[in-house]
Amino acid sequence: MSEIQVASRYAKSIIDLAVEQNALELVKKDIELFVGTCRENPALQAILKNPIISLEKKANILDGLFADKLHKMILSFFHIVIRKGRSEILYATAKEFISQYNIIKNVVKATVTSASPLSKENIAQIEDVVKQATNGEIILSAQVDPDLIGGFILKVGDKQFDTSLSSKLNKLKKEFENN
Image (cartoon, rainbow, N blue to C red):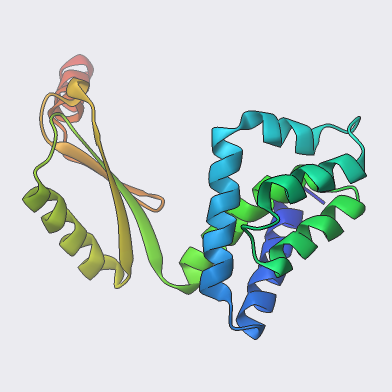
């Protein structure tokens, strides 16, 4: 079974248990803390993936980092996964948990890339349009790419809307080349 499938199943188990214990929001915050810590410290991910480091040492490292910060259920889950020799999937499981949480809560991540920084009003307008289209909560991140020349590229989930001038110029160039 692939790492993604295992991580997905473990994440579903955590969600089910958190819902059962009425602690879904608390668990989500804890998982986000774990994911953020792993992103900021690639050495932690390397330790969890390293088969040479003992299972006990991995558990002690996680306890040292998170014992007073994470819900007991999450720490217990980490210990179970480590005992089973699957510590390499903890990070993937945490990311999958956030993805499944977002699906359950109808949270949509979107990214808008523009040629120049967008004003707060523009960002609010884009959020409103995406909110109406998806009927969900929006997490919008804005990026700047001067190569776009003008316009923007909006990515919502697996869809992309490209209104950039560079894209239109490339299409026009291809049309001229074909004719």
